[in-house]
Amino acid sequence: MVPAQGGGLFETVAITMEQAEALLARQEGHFLDFKDKRIAPAKVARSVSAFCNADGGDLYIGVAESSTGFHWEGFGDPEDANQLIHTLEDVSPFGSDTDAEFLHVDGLPGYVLHINARKSRAIRKTTEGKIYKRLSAQNRLVSSEEDLTALRRQKGLESFESETLPIEAEIVTNSEAIIEYLLSAVPVTEPETYLRKQHLLISGKPVVAAALLFADEPQACLPKRCGIKIYRYSSEEQSRDRLVEDPVTIEGPLYKQIYDAVDRTVEIVAAAAFLDEDGLRSVKYPHEALHEIITNAVLHRDYSVTDDIHIRIFENRIEIQSPGRLPGHITISNILDERLSRNPYLVRHLNRFPNPPNKDVGEGLNTAFESMKKLNLRSPIIEERDNSVLVTVRHESLASPAQQVVEYLKVNDSIKNEQARKLTGVGSESKMKKIFESLIRAGEIEHKPGTAGRGYAYRLKKKQGGSS
Image (cartoon, rainbow, N blue to C red; front, top):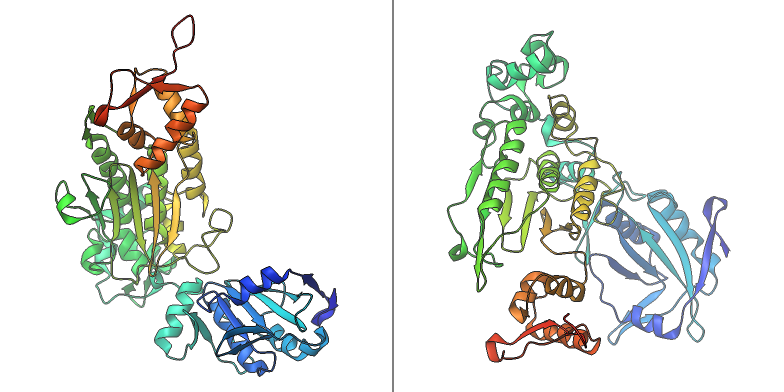
């Protein structure tokens, strides 16, 4: 252990030559940056600022670059890095958004300082007061007011939902939506008074959240920003020629929109029987999971992005894609544990409706995961894309493919490779064949006599002296 700024300690970690070689063989990118030990502290500060203001990353100081690649040239003594450490502490205090350690390898010169920078709740500035953001392998200066506003929104420090709209107040003060809401949720005030006190009406103009919640047609106030489109495909692939019918568009104030979208999705899934060689088959998803994921998409999407929410229904899965990246410090790895609302006005007011669609902040996805487990289905998959978040709900059992085959054969006479792939979600014919072969070796199944070619099938192994 070596002393660190502020009285703490940075650990010295010994790694192997193989680990060092693997590290040096990597390419710099969105999550990785190498710096020479002689670099100016101000330039190192840019990297830490950029990582903390983007998606986090790893910075290694003490790695030189030449025409043949990266080389280990660490500090002769950890104390030689004190000036750098002091500069980094000014950008982001260690323990809040950053951790550090020194790496040492027998046979390689010196100590490499490894900084692990995490996605920060705050906007992190360099010692010069400048703001950077990591984009691919570059540290981009955030200088324009437009870019800074976008960064503040990504951090959750401000929200598009609180911006005023150039529309008349009557659109939200004299709508069916606001009247129904006040009669059921706050039955003691006038619409204009209520909206003004809630900061949903500012200088006589509705804010974005007011239009989304209480305009009878918010899509006219925010065109192409607040609808939901539902698609049904006749296969496992997304292509226009596989669309079963024209996409369904769900509009209206958000409370109604959530329930209409969930009901329509459930209705389409229920009717989506898929034809295979055994006839029509259907799949079922827990209603609760679909409700929570769609609600989460509506509540936490970025309404400054010109796009709708897209729900795609396939043979083996449902995809819910919402515009905008994850807000603030939220990442794929901590999304079920951390709490941050991009649109607090929407979250709070929808929770006041009778039979509110949303629970406490962050609880919806947890509920969706639990409801999938109750039906013995695999957990939803969450992916962050360039400018959207995609949640995929797969109709895939928690049981292993081998276990699913055996359970199927307990109530069915036989099973073929294609049937098994549809049952288990295994995409490869050869991979499925290997699973069958392992079950044969284990004495669980056997070839069904009289079947061959495309009709080749398997059955439970007949036990000696009796039936299976």
